[in-house]
Amino acid sequence: MTELRERNSVSAMHTVSRHRLIQLTASLVLLASHASAQPNAAPQTAQDAFANLSARAPDAFYAPPLQVPAKPGALLRSEPLKDVTLPAGVRGWRILYTTTIDDKTPATAVATVFASSDPPAGPRPVILWGHATTGLVQTCMPSLFSSPALGIPALDRAVKSGWVVVATDYAFAEKDGPHPYLIGEGEARSGLDAVRAARQISGLTLDARTAVWGHSQGGHAALWTGIIGPRYAPDVPIVGVAAIAPVANLTNLFTTSARLDKRLGPLVALAYSRFYSGIKFDDAVRPEVLQAAREVASLCSFLPPEHPKRIAQLMASFEGRTFSARAALAARLAENNADGPIAAPVLIAQGLTDVIVPPAVTDAHVSERCAANQRLEHWTFAGTDHSNIVRPGGALDEPLIAWTAARFANEPQASGCARKAF
Image (tube, rainbow, N blue to C red; front, side, top):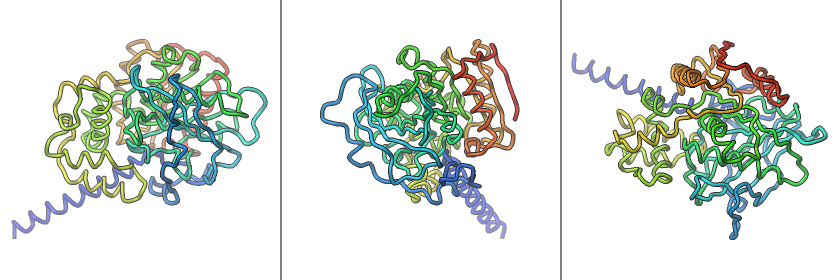
């Protein structure tokens, strides 16, 4: 009888574990907002946000021409968005453009561009948006969504303010990926070059001033854009960087969260093995989880629906962490911590019930940057998790718009570090 009770207890624990992993995978659908054309109809859960969402396969638009200019930021192709759902009063385009992963690796990228259907006269300021984790390959990218603005906070407010939003898919050096996932230089270059390319869209006039927003992976990209922007793209003057629940310190984050290691570790291992010669996927991942990790890295976070279900199964199939104890991998993770100086004003926003990017990890990053004399504001939001911090109509919308408007108006940000609770 005792043995039976023990077996039942173990079975129950495994059931709970699987349930929690499924919940985690749903939470890792990091774009839970803008599920419909009603921008203030906030979804209740991540699943609700994707209930009516679909994605198409990449078509001929995504294929680079035979002759690709060597100069990054060249517009290769553009067309108005069609057969998609956008908030009222918003029009859009998709663009194909040139970029680079690093100084030796040319690439192309697709971005979506959103503007008012009735824009004010004159050049318009730009919001560069970095999206959260959607997957590693091109078939997972937001430009393929039936609601391509999904996950961008306060999009309707930004467009009504006369701003143009440029949302990059990040770069692809070869067909279908992987993209430079959590590789700061590559993520940032693809965003900066998206702004350069968007300036070349016929009928759209952009101001040079650019504010950078990003969520989760995109928060990492936003911080790195602030770090390398003056060097890589001095023609894209950055007036402010807003990083929302950013994956800022990779070393601390992957050490702190075994769950995040299991979900995102495979993506990091595959991307790093593609773009760093000293990293091999088979060495970066523990041998006993190699097969599961390779499959996780090939799947999208939410579409098609069978992908997140399979991810949850794979995560439940092994114990412990993804990464092996390899010094080369640890060094590359540390290299991609977003800890460089940023000349522009910086805002870091964090939900206090976030279990994906724990508040303590963000607090530690903020403290480190403040100690390094980085000028920044740190906002915290009570009762807010990783997904709903970017939901439309949420507590972040109004202060984010006001902060960005102040940056476009060249209002000075106070020196030092300021913390504010919402």
